[in-house]
Image (tube, rainbow, N blue to C red):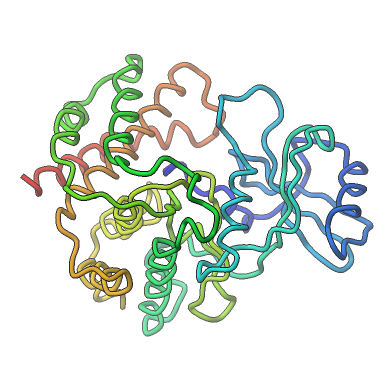
Length: 356
């Protein structure tokens, strides 16, 4: 749950000059040998988005592809694992979860300097506004229902049947995540401390809801990480699987449903606006639809899950703030994102107080 904006979704912002270069002739030769139906000549452009993993538009006379690569050079262990992204999308291809077709995967760094995969360039629409304001009011609820269907389908996937039983650590998801983000927050002294965050660090591990579940989780399931059909309320592909793993489905769903309370200037959200005049389902109706699709009667401790997710996102922004102060933040929008930290921490604290 990066909270740092979309990556692949940003492909709709256009492509141009290749900034992270490689041997394009070597790539063309590899594609000819490994991608069925590939026929050059090949034109390569780099998308303006894809700051985490460089992402390219590949154009031939008969086909357009997207190439997603691991950044070249030394990286943190486990970071930028594009082969993992490819694996989950390949595993989900035969399920009800819409994903882009993966044409080929290359682990050989000698071809372009780092591992990469090539997938179909799915044509459609990406909505950056969670209110779906570009859609006629009477049609907006159908778009929400489609997002709800897709995330319910993801959480209903039989992980063993699709070969993803080893895709992450099963069980104790909340405890592990709270521990991880609490440590990162407490250890980054330069970024400072916030009373709201300190309260959450203390409270969250003591109030984890009973019961445990494991499913594939996307990690950043938002409207702007999906490609919709050009004219219909239908998701053609879910993008940005970089944060996917095995985790608790209610952590994933509540992160997605944070859109109801999320300020729209942080990530795509409704900012607490009344959804009814917008033609959208209420938060309670959206939760009920997910429950019906996943065989639940209700979701207890809803505000706990929201507190957890707002805390997690705030901890990520805290880390970004630390990188800004150290001068190591590579993203041009890093300072602006870091400024969201106090508001996210306050939203987490508010959800926490709703539980108590």
